[in-house]
Image 1 (spheres, rainbow, N blue to C red):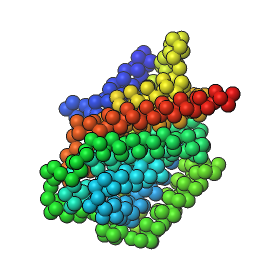
Image 2: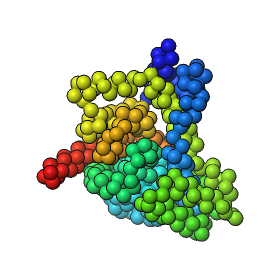
Image 3: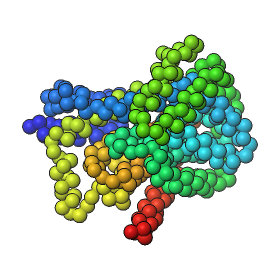
Length: 426
């Protein structure tokens, strides 16, 4: 009875996440995941002790610590100044698009891509409106580059953090393996967006410059110390971020490093810790908590083990990189890449490092396909909409589909090259 109940709760939860809501209710994906976790415990399908034990504390603490570092940079005006500096180059649209994508991809590799998009989008939108540029290509470029760039490191996005913790992966080797497909995919994404909007980077109906002034005021509203922020707080945030990245190359536990950095940043005589904590994405952390519990409930049924045995009996192994690429890409666009990775990691116990690398890159690249594939996409769309710029599903998919297909092809080619090199070495 418990097995049937756990399976039913898991199925309803993941279907709700795939749809993005529940008809008649205002639930979002986080609310659905939390309801699934509550149902697991309240129904007795999963005892409270097991539910609490299912929470992966190192991953949650790592995510929390890095969010504090990114919140410091946002409040100090770092993102606003970076986007404003890029806006000065708006008179050269092609170069502007290139620099926006490079900045987005580079920052997302070192800071959580969701927060980069959250902080960057309002200021970028303001710059676009003031320069009377067509917003769509630049905002799509921002989202695509953020997703692609975040695949380069174990701290670029939430799913990579989970993969790094569960797979016990080292920071340096992960970066070395992922850097090549990420750089190539970023270059391809720029070429695709540029080709799709050739001759249309500056035309099209856009809001007036007055709307751009309003958007700029909106974008600067969350910056501590006014639109220019505070220089010392920016330096403090950058020093903390640099120290965190440097220490990630050491044997020190990543969650301890991130928490220590966050703790140092909370110790301030001028920046209110309440504002800093207010910029932590608690919704994403709660999404993780809910999904940990829901997936733990499914594991008690033995269904994942039986599925693995069935696949193995038919000659299919999820640890095989090409199979994993397809599975990660498909599931990421069904339920978004964070829930997809949380489920797929349960099938990779004992898998070689290349399988974990492949899952990280494939699930992140696949997030560009359609709007629901990545939380970063949704953040860009919602932040732009708040300033009167609408980016629809079809507009995003027009660029997202080719970017994703080419990116995954680059990953497959990289796997092929590495496989050939391994054969030659043996």
